[in-house]
Length: 324
Image (tube, rainbow, N blue to C red; front, side, top):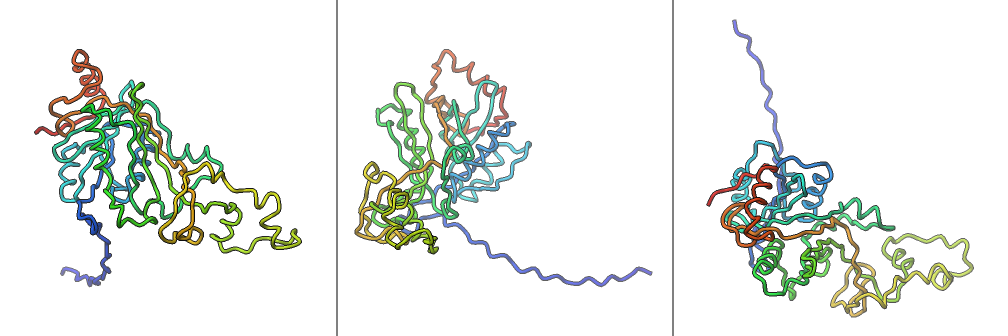
């Protein structure tokens, strides 16, 4: 006789996931989203660079995107459509150098950059006396600033358009100052034809106020005054009141509204940039019409060595292109 098993029903409370909006509720523009992944095997340092790039692209990227060796480019493309992903950032490595491809989905174009040098976010933080990385720093997307791309050449125009569209646009009339906490700077050097890629945090400091006083106001902690004769010594004594950080050398702005506990409306504040990484030196190698395939719009090595360069890259990395 079969044994009857009593099964207890288990109730699982559904998890309410907060969906990200696909359209900006103020500007009405579609919000660009991205996947950052690798093709082929990457060394440990490039794997960390991949994680740094994912963090840089927050909040509109898949921070914990899982990859498998058998995944093809078409697999990522099939998932990208329903999720509203508009751009791919693809890292790869050959025997000669690492590469970064920035592609627009689903039909291209694709920009291929050779990474000459790079520094991880951890390396940048380790080189600083006071690294700065607040918890809400990656809550909003970064601003994008392009410098030196105005020469009028077609490949530079395409590079400008690609990077401008990879981050959400802002409306200067409605943007909140509190949401502008990061900035990505790309500077093109026409002599070396290299692009300096930098990632900074933005902070405001009231002009004429020492670092000690700012820290006192922000942290709401009572300072240790046992060694002082009067409260005024906290401000006037050497070592306390002489810690202003070169406000005259920094750009100053007049705030339209309050920002935090220290920066008040109608007062001057100094704009400070602090690098948070990653840092890269890039060279534009190739622009393709499609998604990692199609006709060549630009090739740095010229038509004579175009085929040799393309074959070298295809043989040494796991690159599955999508046909038109």
